[in-house]
Amino acid sequence: MIRNSVFLILILMIAVQAVAQIGAVSPAPPQGSQASSLPVSGRNVQNGSVTATQSPVPGTTTSVNTINPSIQVQGPYAGSASSTVTAPFNGKLSLREAIERGLAYNLGPIGLNEILHQARGQSRMSRSALLPNITGTVSESLEQINLRAAGLKLNVPFAGFSLPTIIGPFNVTDFRARLSQTIFDFTALNNYRSAEQILKADAFSVDDARDLTVLAVGGAYLQVIAAAARVDAARAQLDTANALYKQTADQRSVGLVAQIDVNRAEVQVLTQQQRLVSLQNDFSKQKINLARLTGLPPNDQYDLIDEVSFSVPPLSGFNDALKQALDQRSDLKAAEAQVQAAERYRLAARAERYPSLSVNADYGTIGVNPAQSHPTYSVAGTLRIPIWEGGRTEGSIEQAEAALAQRKAELSDLRARVESDIRNAYLDLQAAASQIEVAQKNLEVNEDTLTLNRQKLDAGISDNLAVVQSQDALASARLDYINSLFAHNIAKLSLARALGRASDSWPRFLTVK
Image 1 (tube, rainbow, N blue to C red):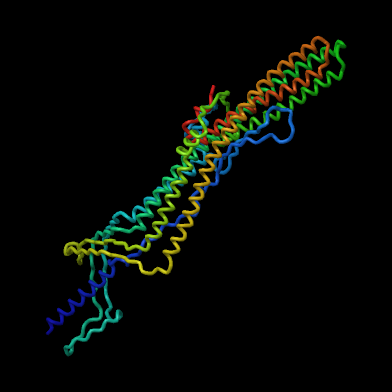
Image 2 (cartoon, rainbow, N blue to C red):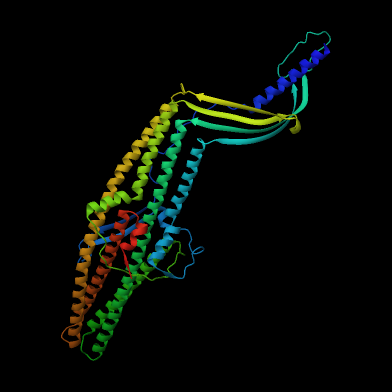
């Protein structure tokens, strides 16, 4: 009888231990996959832009310059990280180096590169739901169980004998590897494919940011070149005004001209001096702006070594250019990938209604110590069949359809924008080319007029009023030519961006001396 009682106690202890171990390692009930969240809009969250514009000069003017070109840079594209630590600068900046520094250090591409890294991480996380997940555990536990506290009451049918209410202490050592594998789960699969499309869209967005950076940096470089040319023209006008003032003062000293001519020449010198100061101030600001775009120290203590002259761009027919743009524009490819991501997101939401199958397995050794352990294992396959989830699936589908509709609308809008970019670039090129031709002829005429009026002044058959007026007209003509050349180069750079892959193709559009 005693032997049977001891045997019963041992069985009870083993049962309690087994129950405790099973409760510790049993997997949680399988949960169904949910469609990943997706923003309604697929457009870039940086809110930065680079835009080239050519607006008409307002009001009436006697100048041949009728268009006013400008590069508008907003958001992260207006700033940069410091580049001089990793890329030393010798104080001489070429156009190619400026663009290369912009591509490497401008905040536009840098910010989108970090977004791309995030998207790559999200794609890997989505893929992990489809791959085997293996974990290993080592546990050592020391336990003592109070059966009475657990509500377990056993009556032994032997007089004078009762079962103990406290079992233990005893220890358990467990070495175990666990495997979980999804066999089929269409929601998880489409989540992964949606994440892959978002990753592809972000990669295209980085390429588009590089094209915008070329437009921003290239446009800023051209603005500095134009500002430098204006300074040189103003300095030449000041030299001419000083020479005229000296000549008029000499003639006044011998009584050949009136004092009013001397005063008029002196006013012209002062006017040219102030004009030169104003243009030098603008020149310094343009250099500081270029430095901010390329990661250089924000000052004007450097020199530009390139000049961009007039050249005919490599034009093709409009239809060919539009086809090239539709094939090459990275922002368009990004929008198409965003539509694909939204479609996969909708499939993932719909797949929440489908069954899913998974396998969970574990293998290990368990015992009171490693020397006395024995192998144990378990394999479980789970088929999950969703029946009713309180309308969550319908809500996911509605969100997915809203995102898909929005991204399709954005893609349609972007296709129209690409066509408008090509048309605007062609129109700006035609207007700027015509303006250059007129400005160049106007410059030649005013140079001849100034020469003739100075000859008349030297001969004493005219006062210096005509000469002063000719100087002002020549100064305006020179500025017209500078602005027209700047407008033409900006239009070519805009065309390179409108066609796509500007980071590679810009040297074909700008002729650098």
